[in-house]
Length: 352
Ligand SMILES: Cc1cc2nc3c(=O)[nH]c(=O)nc-3n(C[C@H](O)[C@H](O)[C@H](O)COP(=O)(O)OP(=O)(O)OC[C@H]3O[C@@H](n4cnc5c(N)ncnc54)[C@H](O)[C@@H]3O)c2cc1C
Image 1 (tube, rainbow, N blue to C red):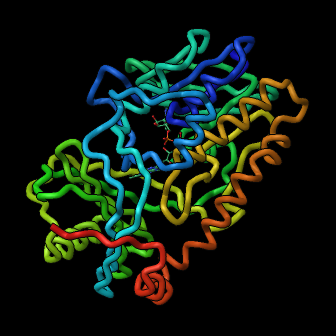
Image 2 (tube, rainbow, N blue to C red):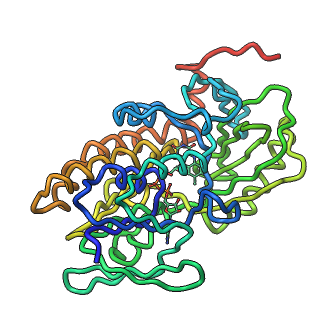
């Protein structure tokens, strides 16, 4: 019997596991592995935005060099491929190896937390005051019980689906393909094309690889991705033979009702709670901040932690709502055209 079971050790789960008091008996169940390259790795752009950097500084954490990758880029080439518009915007991302970043966060978890890695949570049952959690590990099924459960298991959260089936959230299919980098100058890009997706696509140069990705309505995702490649190829992008293709769901909050933080003694953190920017799909900072908020509440021994967490995570929801209002300027072709044509906030680049 544990006090707390954490499902998922991405930035949200690893952070709460690090911050919870020693007095709790904690188990954390996660699919990833530090040693086995064939185990699950989270598909991600691996760009650490300014807000996530701020959260790390509040945690008094400094990034080890081992999680950084080449090169560090300070501008995003923004392309509206239907309206043939191009602008550059300054950005302050840190270019990371996402898997190494996740593993570094896990390495900071104190020893009193029992970590079950390469383990997949398969079911959760509420039995009176207790949660019974089953997971697959080493080809066998194990079951534990816990008084509190924390769903930090990302977009396709089993905790959200099983315990809160009425709290569904819109999700898109995200596809990323890796190629050998062949461009003379590495770059980031952000691509809008309403024939391909009503969200956006991106490319990232990372340690000798060129990654093309995008978020698509799930039914047409694969075809849209191929169409994207064809279009970009004509616009000078170089792809070659794909080395790796990865796909996963990504949450697309459409308003306040998309966010859900939990009830009784079951809580949702990070993307499982719907905390991801609907405009940029940046999610690491919200994972950090929601984990911090819940850790403080549980450590304080508050009588109604679910209510307190709902209230204390209000700033996160308000911030995301403001991002939602910003979305039309990125995603509505006419508004985007006006913004891009005006050159507002853009920078000039000397093309080589
Ligand atoms: C393609 C793509 C690119 C992105 N690029 C960026 C970016 O550049 N910068 C940025 O800030 N955000 C980016 N995001 C969003 C960001 O990845 C997420 O919002 C962020 O990782 C959320 O953190 P989390 O801890 O809530 O969930 P996750 O990072 O998704 O972690 C959840 C973890 O739970 C584990 N898990 C899930 N289900 C189970 C289960 N049943 N049993 C056991 N373990 C389980 C998995 O190991 C997983 O790693 C991107 C998202 C996608 C899909």
